Length: 89
Picture 1 (cartoon, helix red, strand yellow):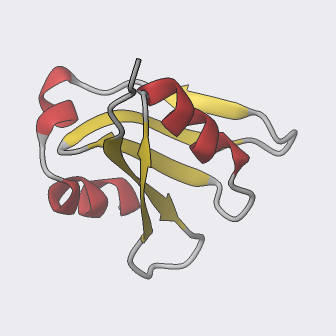
Picture 2 (cartoon, rainbow, N blue to C red; picture 1 turned 45 degrees about the horizontal axis):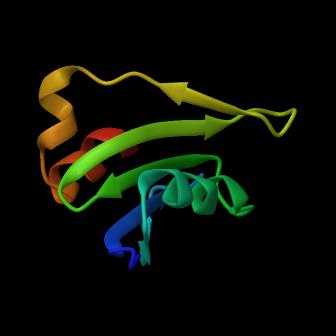
């Protein structure tokens, strides 16, 4: 059985005010994409996107644990450019 690889991207927000770092990659499902996000060591604030849909916004704590942030239903479908500005504020 052949797996369809979907396009995901991550937005890594740094401590400074610069634009978030964007990383695009393909994965067979959201679980694999989520694991990719958790393995990054460079950023404390991360957004995981499946195409134009925001899947999760999360932040790393001091103990190197991840906290998942809830989203209002309308925010999960806006494009990445609209979300990037709101999340960086």
